[in-house]
Image 1 (cartoon, chains in turn orange, cyan):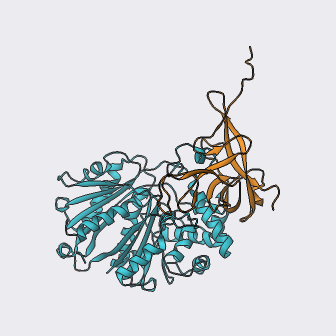
Image 2 (spheres, chains in turn orange, green):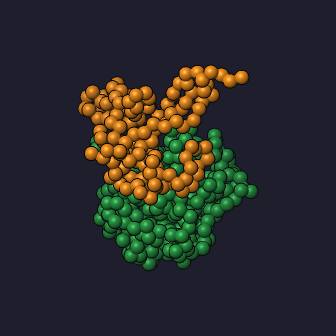
Image 3 (cartoon, each protein chain N blue to C red):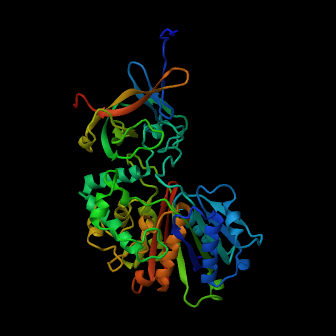
Amino acid sequence: MQEAPAERKQVPIKGARLRLGDSPALLGSRCPGCGEHFYPPRYVCLNCYHEGLEEVALSTRGELYSFTIARVALPGTLMTPPYVIAQVRLTEGVQVATVLADIDPEAARIGMPLELVVEKASVDSEGNDVMTFKFRPAKDAS
Amino acid sequence: MGERVVILGVGLHPFGRHPEKSVGELARVAALAALKDAGVEFKDVQAGFCGHVVQGVGTGLRTFGEVGLTGIPITNIELACASSSRAAMLAADAISGGIYDLAMVIGVEKMERGLLSGVGGAEGGYQAKMGIALMPALYALMAQRHMHLYGTKHEHFAQVSVKSHRNGSLNPNAQYQKPLTLEDVLNSRMIADPITLYECSPTTDGASAVILASEKKAKQYTKSPVFMDTWAGGTPQYVRGESDFLEGPNTMLAQRVYEKAAIGPEDVDVVQVHDAFSPGEVFLVEELGFCPHGEGGPFVWEGNTEINGRLPINTDGGLLSRGHPIGATGGAMITELTLQLRGQAAARQVKGAKTALMHNAGIGGVNVIAFKT
């Protein structure tokens, strides 16, 4: 007996603040006092100590600030070595720790333009698709 | 100015793999060695500070209890890889403030083999699932940035490990006492570019103990004291627009210590830095003011940090070769510098060393300490 393919919901991976849907983006904070941006989101501004920051969708573009190629498998991870661990600097100046997709690890270069990509990571116990994010070389490097 | 603080005694349990030994036994060996070295009886110790990370509730009482139950206050201190140096700083604060005359620090750790991961509260979320919470990767990200900005080469980092292993071969308490060639280091398994296996500190079992006294009290025991002269601890500072992978404001802490100790980097004879991974020493010779920013690679490569060099660093093998039982490491750094300033470092002795600087870092904070004779 086969279940009808019910509407499978997409849920973000635990520990990521990720907006799914038509225009996926990382959700961060913007300080209404001084304009500073943060990822992950926070309540108190580290720059001016304003309390109660606004949730904002962060830019889906950035550049590679630094990277390394992980050559060993960590237990319990979804990644298979070799893969690129990346520190990405978004347009707002926010740094995000992530991994790179769609790239030959040896081709990673500091400064290369990147864009956000959302991928299915796994299926949870309720049958929902667990979605994660990576960054990949920007398609239209402008 | 408070009371001056003297390092009266130091002791180690040899670092290495000791799966058959309990944490208590490791600590007991180090503690008894330090008491003997100081010429102090445990009943005269007024307070105990225990640095450890993953040994569980009440490790302080469990370890100090191995050498006596005298009713003294014992405090557990966790600052990741910098736990026992912070323990020593808190003991020194109390002595300097006139609260105690004689205090003792035990640092201890028993560790599993393999990569340390999930440190820093990754909590099994995105970072753990995506394979980002990899300790060598944190140093690798900084190393790649350094290579990009300054043209630092992998060989420069690897040379740190060659030097450390040579020094470790002169240290009977080191986990690794076998020299390695540059080729050995470069050709060992790549872990996270540019860091190879032999550029990673190992997991280690071991213990360290340090006995601290006020200058007045110390006069009962020694005529040639080594002073823990100045110390400063810190955590990362948020600076707008700056992306900082560092565990703390190394440069600012070093400047504070130099100022309070009335010395400059040029006055330092021997150094301990936190080389959990080989790039650490390259970054720190810059951040502690021993060479200009960007020149750490060539500075190390040219041999300046060798025992017979201009600025000997990690004369006991450092974290890379002496080993890194995280809670015990700070006490081991204090031990080596104390031996150096006493002229008791045997084959590792830096001739005429009178002033020493130490840097110990962990996830959660950094400690910088200056020692003088």
